[in-house]
Amino acid sequence: MFEALKQSIFTSIGVASLTQEKIAALVSELGKHMPISEKEVKDFSEEVSRRSETAKKELNQQIDSQIDHAFIQMGLVRNEIRKATESASDGLTRLIDERIDAALERLGVARVEDVVALQHRIELLEKDRSGR
Image 1 (cartoon, rainbow, N blue to C red):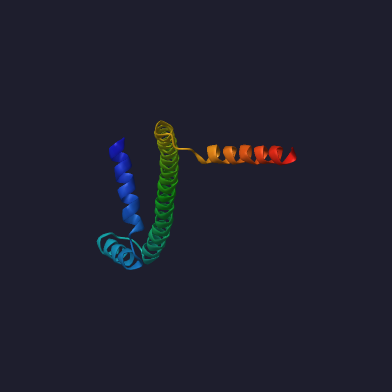
Image 2: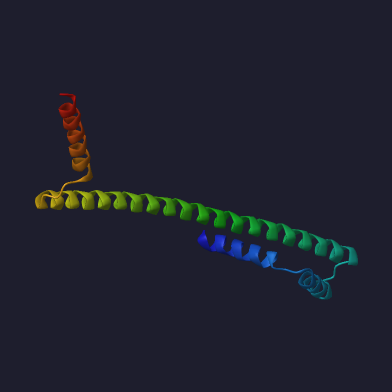
């Protein structure tokens, strides 16, 4: 089955690669070796040309389809890699933040939130004291 498929593909590629000059040479050579009329040679030449063009179009469509499929897969893979990278980055950021917070707490260093809360308490105390 695979061999038949391979041969079919190779034949399509072969027909698709035929140029008008090659077709004319092939038909001319055929006309020399077989007893066929001038009309049959012309008809055969036209049919081979038509099939060659059809095969070229089909081959180009198949190639375009495979390229599109590959780009789609690459896009999906790229999207999955981006998601995994973002997730890993978020996890790493959280881990670093946790470690920094723990280190600052062990060192007794005040955080911004602590300073802001302290400033707020001082303002309240100053208001309260001035109101007396």
